[in-house]
Length: 220
Image (cartoon, rainbow, N blue to C red):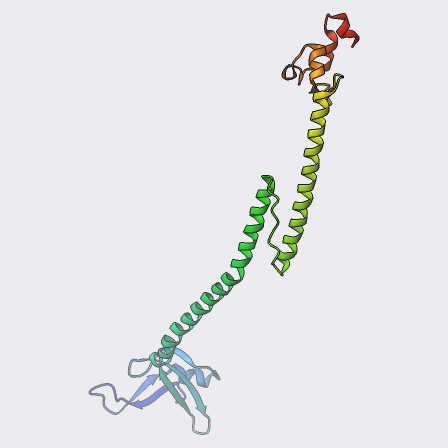
């Protein structure tokens, strides 16, 4: 009615006589122009309901439709576990896809890292040549670098051996110093001329050689 009260007969209250006037939030909301359901109130038989009121101006009445809140929540109770299960399946599938993608990538990174460590140890083994992706480009570049390093190392070793031969068999004393004028090279002839063996001379300031009391050595 106009006062927002619901006039009904009681089917749920024992001993009730005639009709009951019951407050109805749905009626009140409907008369105020609300077009959305009113939740969380108790119906006239004490059950929580979701209701909506539709005014009937010609009759000065309000039509009320109510549904039990338990009935509204029941589908959610079934849907939420399904949604959670679906979400878990999607997450698991995503992790599986990432694993399938990243496993070969991580494997190739590990191979290249091991090759780099072996280069530091003097092993210039080539990288795999059967990769046909970006890692294949990187592997081929790595192999070319390893070849260049191996060639440069071989050349340095050859030059070192040649220098050792020159120092060992030269008739002249050969001495070299670093930027601090400390002896770093000292051959056998220098040992005979100055009387210092190699392990004594290396690291010695070169001016010590010209402080010797022997006049013949000072002239040298």
